[in-house]
Length: 306
Ligand code: SF4
Image (cartoon, rainbow, N blue to C red; front, side):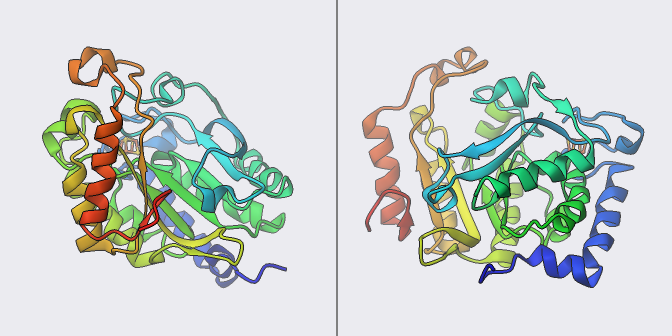
């Protein structure tokens, strides 16, 4: 028996989950699920920027040991990689999935069985990778998974380009939010991800996520139970706007936000078309990013004892 009970089970028992599913699916009829606001009817399989229609599209699902330690624990994070994305990052490391559409349509029954399979393998959570454009489909599969015994936390692992209105409908469903904050400047967001309003959007979204789940809470084994994890990938030439991002987190979210500052940038997909993006970052660039985070007062930086 788990000492921690995910919120989605209570919502299911009270009938609230069914109401949310209806509201989320209604959005698909004139899709404004994310800030792209394509207004296509996805229930008729019309496709917008994200190129996903009515059914979930999944690339793969498996225990993942490369995620943040509080998610991985000792049995892995149960990742489900959703196909396509609402961001258009020219440097995406998963471009075969996010841009080229590797994956296949699955039914709700199959999606629920994936969750159960991951739980049976001992994973500590179900980690939906790039869920933003497929949220109604994911939540629609949840009741079947709950009926089959799902009881581990759900992770919303996203690029940060989220509609706050949609996020409000997820209150109590996701236990852990793990957004990227990719940029501190909109001109860079437009240049690299075709998202000219990214900065305002991600700030509002992360505030809403934090309002729902708070700072990260771990159990006695250090495994995440609930809360916010923020990822920030350091880019060459300071393009990620690290100082603005870290200042925002420390001053407008919480100095106790769990932050993963990532050093693994490498030029992928179409990154070579932007000269500044055609190299890895240097050790100095990474250390400077960490220094900035410490200096603005962040106290939970992954891998850093502050
Ligand atoms: S979820 Fe897809 S179709 Fe809907 S607004 Fe976003 S990009 Fe457009």
